Length: 620
Image 1 (cartoon, rainbow, N blue to C red):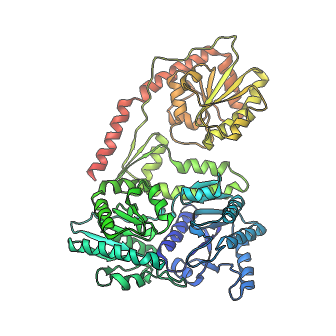
Image 2 (tube, rainbow, N blue to C red):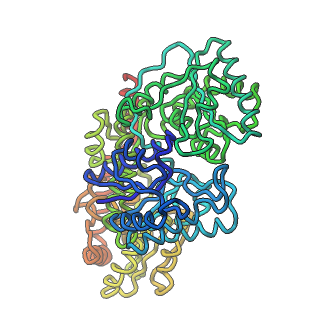
Image 3 (cartoon, helix red, strand yellow):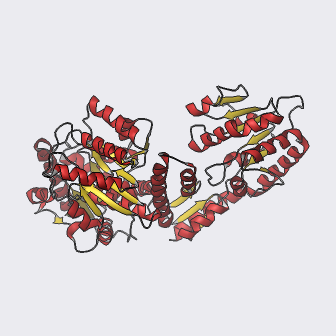
């Protein structure tokens, strides 16, 4: 597989190089033999750092622009997938860009990909603030032309519309090294970047004043340079260091100095970053990576993206504006330094903290793999990109966790391959007094499928039942009714009821149990898989006749004595007919299913398993 990547790489901005390194690593995790061509402003530097093929950006005003366009078109045509991003690639204007900024170039790149027949997706992209109505409309057009739109944050998603999915910052997928416990000596790091003069002067006064006060209180401090301005005006953090901090802070080394390969250099850099008890970060990725390894951090939001990132992490309290004064910054710094547990929890949100107990509702990689297999056409490359991202993130989270809790035997086996401290904790299911009994013989056959109807997995099942299963059922049971029950049905689900009154989409209902108890059978197959299909377990606990596929049956340790196990449309329709026409057989299976849930999914066992997991974590 050959993947093209377009972004602002090669300018010796450590954040951008981390994003590119992380994306390449993610793709190679699922496609080991993948090759890459990176379209960027400084191809030679990217080739040196990342060891990949490169091409210049297809700008129109550069020397040799016509030859460059031909070379770019040829390279795009050679790709199986073209990825835009990650990073803040969409900018209408900035201190270094006049309007309309980068948007026309990216629109042109997409047009070139369309001509070449190469699908395009965005991965972890951001949109710089300050856009115009023209820019917002162009972004909608760009999003519509992509097979998938993965964005960094909610604000960026709003520019692209409902097709956008927030996948977070790609830097979160950077593999973290084993980190040593922080020593008793108080140490902080400061990241500061060049800004417009009206912002830079007051902020330098605030940051240097705060740093000086921390030093007076016994802290040691270093300056964390994140960008060196190769071919980019106003991007060299060393200028700031020499101007305001050289007499106050030591200068940290950079992973971009060529002393070792980038992957190893990043590990060393992260290990050094983790020795701090506080980070003051103007650069986005200095702040985000500090949070990812659990270091208390105060972010200075010189751009909206910094604010957005900390809001998404639940850390909005630790963001300050660029006009902050020294006293306020100092108060926030000491407040953050004291909030070690809060930042440890934030690191667990990122999913890479070794101090966490990780609870897995299911192995999402398996779900995404089934989504990829079920996809076709232009959707397929996007599902592959999502699979790559999910696999890399999930495996890293499993490996890094102190203990992992899974809900099913199949997920337990997968997680244990990556972390030996994996515990099986089947969810507790309450078996109450209400139980199923056969509906009146004269009643209209009623089938129920229940779930959150905005979820793609449930939409796929609803479509299967209405379009493929029920036409077969109606040959023998022409009055049979399919009730699709659950909140927030999508337009596609609502549309299933428009052509046939025998399909009913209820939306949210006050009582799921009553819907199940009033049905001749609960029909809950699975298409994309998952851990324990809770809707199956809950229907079994009510003693309902349950028709499901083999995966969910295995997840609840069920078999044909207590469930109707069916996978294809013909098999499901045959099971429906049996359940409706043989109510005593259906009731007997339901009774066995209810007894099985009562024996196997006990709350006492669930609690004991969770306590075991936390005990394992506590011993590490």
